[in-house]
Amino acid sequence: MDHLLGRLQHYDWGSHTALAGLRGCEPTGRPEAEVWFGAHPSSPATVDRDGGPETLAALVAADPPAHLGPAARLRTGTLPYLVKLLAADAPLSIQAHPDRATAEAGFAAENDAGVPLDAPQRTFRDPHHKPELLIAVTPFRALCGFRPVDEAIEVGSAVGLPDDLLAPLRRQGPAARAELVGRILAGDTVGDMVAQCSRGVAGPWQVTADLVLELSERFPGDPALALVPLLTDHHLQPGEALFLGPGVLHAYLGGVAVEVMAASDNVLRGGLTGKHVDVDRLVEVLDSGAPATTVQSPGRGVHRYDTPAEEFSVWRIEHTAVDVDQRTGPDIVVCIAGPAVLSSGATAAGLELAPGNAAWIPHGDGDYRIDAVGLAYRITTGEPVA
Image 1 (cartoon, rainbow, N blue to C red):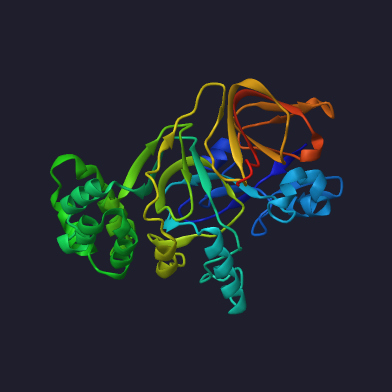
Image 2 (spheres, one colour):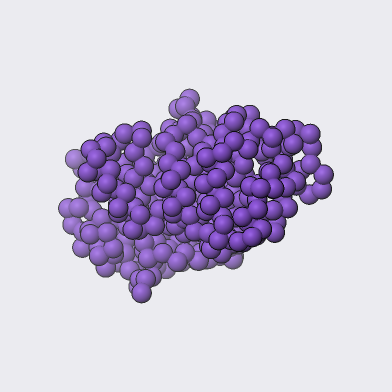
């Protein structure tokens, strides 16, 4: 097992202080949005070796069976999941993630068209889908999944969405959601809605009107503002989590979180961003019939989140110790409140993690122990999908 040195990502929505505070280091003076602990080629983490830092991607590629074990089959010898620390001081885009078939076809089409992998206008950075678990470290606000139809019509009407726009929902129910998103992103309903929200909204939906006004100051005139009333507004407390499958419309609004996902950098954006927007692809992948996104609350001690993805599974370990055996793949352990000490027969002295730090435990290392004085997350591969 080794200390895993994450890669810091600077995006304009990131916090200037939250990740530095968590990691116990000086801020860089730039927005610090994410720390990546993984082997994705866009930004692989590193491990210190005698010859100097070595990327996790290179380390795994040199001996996939030893590092990945049975998980080597999931991504043809590469690490199947990606772990991030995320700190949002401003909203991320309204977006969804592609399913496997869409990602494969989109990646191949952009390659055939000669679009460089790092081109700003590129939609698919890799050929993989991206199921994802978001776990709040601080109070975290997220729009995630569509509201129930009756509720969406009620709040949409209250904040000034026109009746003819909402009519398909009244007639067809959930089946009309993708069509409605396409009409909103191609239309111009924002001005009247913002005006209505500015006048004030009677009843329980003033909080939604306030959010629309807040976002409209940052993204004036963006058609995607009209999607805000249609999405469920989640206020997560530390430890609570949301699992997002492909095609779930969402936007993260603020807070610090741990993100675990299948190793992919594919995002289909619809607005509220300065990055590339691909409305057609977004509407194409939306899962209009997806069940309501539910908040998962952790149990005490050791808790495993419900993550129906073969690429990853996630345990929360708080104020306790756990012996890890019967391993199915490689592990990454991230410390949130420390210290956390990892030990095995091969590392009797133990590997101590401070908050914001992570460790890489290859499958070939076998059984080991996690002693979490504070709080740590263990990420490994998931159950095989039939």
